[in-house]
Length: 311
View 1 (spheres, rainbow, N blue to C red):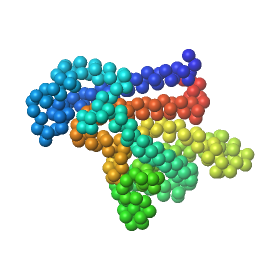
View 2 (tube, rainbow, N blue to C red; view 1 turned 45 degrees about the vertical axis):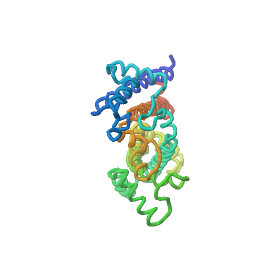
View 3 (cartoon, rainbow, N blue to C red; view 1 turned 135 degrees about the vertical axis):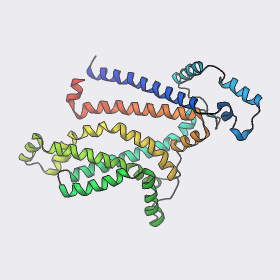
View 4 (cartoon, one colour; view 1 turned 60 degrees about the horizontal axis):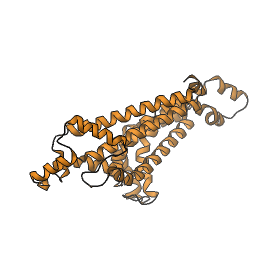
């Protein structure tokens, strides 16, 4: 097989394994939570469901069957792309997720673009310049060590309450995305800027940079046109971490800014022990993570052809 096809085959096989592991972990976690799933489906303790109603629910959802049988049926539904129905909302989980995923994707994509943009800009401007580098590192350390929710509160206090530039809560219009995206992007940008700057400083000492200077290339051209590509590999390696930060951060940021999205759905599902919704979001997160990993693997070959040739 060609190297690219062989690499894709391995990655797809690994993706199937990751999805199986995520689904198994979610199934086991939900089954280990104390309490009666039938009572949760019936509306919780406050619903005061009769024993007859609880027995009917157990029969309908197969809760009397052995755990192994329940697990096998659960995997069978996943193979058919059937995530089941929400206990609380009484609707298919796929529809519940589909209604909210757009807002979360917009927030995550905006935060990723802002984070990578800030990181590349800071690294390009400060690499090899000691004074600017020291100042940039101080700012990056502050952004990395500050939690998302506290950054969000500070941004709200400064730009919403004091200056009135952006709306306080809600998700109406592009202006409502600015502060949530910034709250998610700043910690990510701090880490990426440090990694990118180190890669740039190493690249600027390589022979190709010295040759470009000897030919009269400007410093800006050397940094942007040549050195930045060599510094891209460590940044690509961190893409999986960036995705994890975005997925975890959206839960907090959507709560702080009162935005709709998967974070809001997950919080409500965990509180209400809505097992199918939690499982659906976990499996979806694993799928997105795997697809991003495949994309990063392909980008490695574009950033450094030697990797693609050796695969």
